Image (tube, rainbow over all chains, first blue to last red; front, side):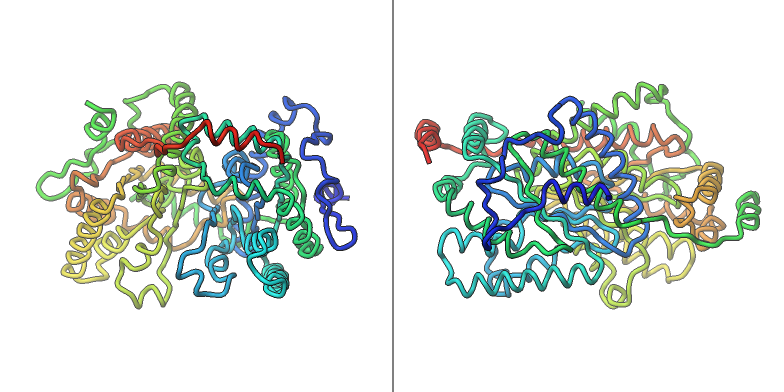
Amino acid sequence: MSELDDLHNLLRARPAAGAVNLAGYDPTDTSAQPSRRAADAELADLRHELFEFHGRLLAECSRSVLLVLQGLDCSGKDGTIKHVVIGCNPAGVKVSSFVEPTKEEQDHEFLWRYRRCLPPPGHLGVFNRSYYEDAIVPLACGTEPAEVVDDRIERINEFEADLHGSGTVVVKCFLHLSYDEQRRRFLRRLRRDDKRWKFSEADLQTRRRWNEFQAAYGSVLARTSPDHAPWLVIPADAKWYRNWLVARVLRATLADMNLDYPRIDLDLDRLELLLRAPN
Amino acid sequence: MSELDDLHNLLRARPAAGAVNLAGYDPTDTSAQPSRRAADAELADLRHELFEFHGRLLAECSRSVLLVLQGLDCSGKDGTIKHVVIGCNPAGVKVSSFVEPTKEEQDHEFLWRYRRCLPPPGHLGVFNRSYYEDAIVPLACGTEPAEVVDDRIERINEFEADLHGSGTVVVKCFLHLSYDEQRRRFLRRLRRDDKRWKFSEADLQTRRRWNEFQAAYGSVLARTSPDHAPWLVIPADAKWYRNWLVARVLRATLADMNLDYPRIDLDLDRLELLLRAPN
C-alpha cells in the first residue's frame, strides 16, 4: 500500500445513505500524529520533499496538480496556503482565490471563471474556494431550485473527469472545523489589528446557517467523490495537524505520479570543449 | 536616508556617455556583506519580514510590485525566485517566465503578452525575463533595425511610466554574472541529472555573443533607468550574496510603500455577543 492509499483510508469522505454525515467526523481529531512537536518538525521536512517533487512536476511540464481547498470561514484555507504551499517553488504555483463572481463572470456559465484559472502544465494550482461554492451555497441557502444544483453537480463531475483525463490530478480537501473553534477564531480575528479587515458581517449570516451548511457539504461531498478525485475530510481545529495532513497528502500525491526529470541526450564531451574555449 | 536609498546608492546602474559600462561592475563583488554565514542568517530573517510586508500589500489590495529579473543564462533568475520570493505568501505571488513568443503572441504588439501577466492589485509579480529581451536580443544579435529597437525602448519607458502611475512599483534587477562563472554553471548543469534538461544548445550561441550582450545590456540599462524604476546591477557570481541583496531590495521596496492593514470600524461588543450566542 502506498502512502497515498493510507491517507485515503484515513481521510476519505464515506457516504452513507446518499450523504456524508459530517457529525461523524471529529474536527478536533489529531490521532494520526498526536504530538504537535513531531508534526511541526515533520512539516519542515515535508516542505523540502514537496519542493523536490514539485520541481520534477515543473521539469516534466506535462501534467498538473489542482489542490481544491473548501471549508467554512476561518477553517484555515489561507493558513494552509501560507504554511504548506509556501514550500513549493513560486515559479510553478498558481493560487486563485474566488469571491463573489463579477457581472462578467455571472454572464458566463458557472465553470467559466474556474477554467481560466487552471494550472498550466507542470504547475501546482490551488483553488481557495472553488466551483463547489456554486453547489453548496444555493443548497444551504435555498437560493436555487434543486434541479439547478443537481445540474451543477453533474457538470462538476464531468469537469473533474475531463481534468483527470487531460493530466490534472485533482486533490480535494474539506477543512472540517467545529462550531466552537469557528467562534474562537472569529473573536481572535476581531481583536487583532492585522486580522480585523478580513471580517465581514456576512460571515455571521453564514454562521447562523451552520447546520444547513454541514448538511449541504455532506450532500455535495457524497455526490462528487470519485476515485480519481476523492474528497478528503481534514480535521481542522488544530492548525498544526491540518498543515501536517495536507502537506502529507500533497507529498503523497506527487510521489504517486512517478515524476522524473526529462532525459535528454547530449554529447557532453563536445559541449564541455565548447564551453572551455576562451572568449 | 532610507534603506532603499542606501541600496540604490550601492547598486544603481550609472550610465556614462550614454551607456552603462558593465566591465566596471565586478560580478564577484560581495563587499556589502563579505560573510556568507551572516548573509544566510540574515536571509532567513529577511524572508520573514518580506512575508509580513507582503501580507500588508495583499491586505491593502490596491498597489502592486513587479520584480523584473534579467540576466544571461545561469545568472540565477530561477534561483532568486526559489530562494527569495519563496518567502512570500503564495496567494499573493504571480511568477511569469517568458520564453520564445508563440505565433499568437507574435501577431500582437510586443508588450501584449507581458501586459496579460501583470500582477493584480495586492500582488507581487515576478517576470523571469521580460519585455527587455525584445530590445536586448535584437540589439546584441542585429536582428532588427536600430529604429525598431529605439521604438521598443521608448514604448518600454512609456509602459513603465504607466505602471508607476497606476500604482505598480517596478523593481528591476540585472543579475550580473562573469564569463567564467557562467562556464562553471553550465558545466555543473551538464553533469547533473536533475539539471541537464535545462540545457539547450542555443544557450551556447548566446554565450558566443558574450561581448555583444554586455554592450546591449549596457545600452538598454542606460536608456531605461528613470528614478521611478531604476536598474539595479546585482553582482551574481556568489549566489548567497545575490539572494541577500535581492531580498533586501524587495524588503526595502515594500517598507518604502508605507503599507498598512485596512482599518475598518466595527461594533466589537455587538459582534462578540452575536458570536457567543449558542447555535
